[in-house]
Amino acid sequence: MRQCCDSVFKMTRRDAIKKGSVAGLVPMFPMVVTHLKKDNAMTKDYDVIIIGGSYAGLSAAMALGRSLRNVLIIDSGLPCNRQTPHSHNFITQDGSTPAGISQKAKSQVLKYDTVSFIEDKAIKGRKEEGGFYVLTESGKEFKAKKLVIATGIKDIMPSVKGFSECWGISVVHCPYCHGYEIRNKKTAIIANGEVAFHLAPLVSNLTDNLSVLTNGKADFTPEELLKLKEHNIHIIEKEITEIEHENGFMKNVVFDDSSTMHFEAAYGPLPFQQNLDIPEFIGCELTEQGYIQVDMMQKTTVDGVFACGDNSIRMRSLAIAVSAGAIVGAVANMELSKEEF
Ligand SMILES: Cc1cc2nc3c(=O)[nH]c(=O)nc-3n(C[C@H](O)[C@H](O)[C@H](O)COP(=O)(O)OP(=O)(O)OC[C@H]3O[C@@H](n4cnc5c(N)ncnc54)[C@H](O)[C@@H]3O)c2cc1C
Image (cartoon, rainbow, N blue to C red):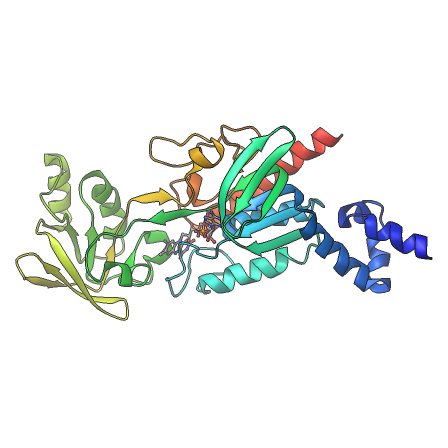
């Protein structure tokens, strides 16, 4: 009996599952399973490390956990949509809170005993023969055969008073995520040139009361100006100094000449930066726009490193992040399976 217990202790959860013994283990030896899961976290040696445990990272972990892979998720707990009260356009979760969606995802993913999750921040990575090493802010080091970067992006807020307080509440990034809720409202597009002109038809489909605030001299071609005029879209070139609001719900835009205009909602496409200095961290190349360069299989330019979610695609939504994560999970598992076969 002693021998039997010892040998089970030495088995990883995955070995046990592969040997078909887990169905029997769970009711008979619940302590053993708990210990194995704890043991997994202590070995600091994984099949896959996922940096970023939000929608994209959790989705990758789901596919990997279900493939019996030892996975460590390292997450610093700051998803980009954390200020938005309700999330939309993600089927089965339309109108749920962002935290509610990720909590549910996390609880489903962590049911797979080979998946571990720690709250920490990855600060350094390196590739060596045999795997990837990740150092965290709290001084821990982990090793894995594959690395998934699901770190999202950081929106860079303008230095306009009130803007960041309204972000995700009444100043939004995307007509698909929040356009329906602010339809028919007195709306501004706070952008100029190509970006503003790209948004204009989409927003004009949702409201007839639309202005473009270019925050300085407008930068449109004569054809674009004509189109905007045809659709009764006003262009305001004055510089913005403040967005007056109540609890994030915008009331007025204040300009540098002290004049104000009342708006109920705005689209504010923002510049961004990667949350991790990716080339420095692990050597992956970025695109010209600053996204991590990936192929159709979400592989980066460094063999064995994958990226998914906002950090590697311009189209920004939960559905797209989750989809990319699912691809990463499947492809990373396929690579591992082939390497072991
Ligand atoms: C204000 C706002 C509202 C939005 N509303 C909607 C909506 O209604 N519907 C919709 O479909 N989409 C919406 N989106 C888009 C959606 O939130 C993103 O597409 C989605 O969050 C991307 O998921 P992700 O996992 O790639 O990144 P994120 O959700 O941003 O998560 C990245 C995770 O990585 C972690 N991380 C970063 N760096 C490190 C590190 N070095 N170490 C460890 N962890 C790290 C972060 O803490 C975070 O938990 C919204 C976006 C914004 C900004």
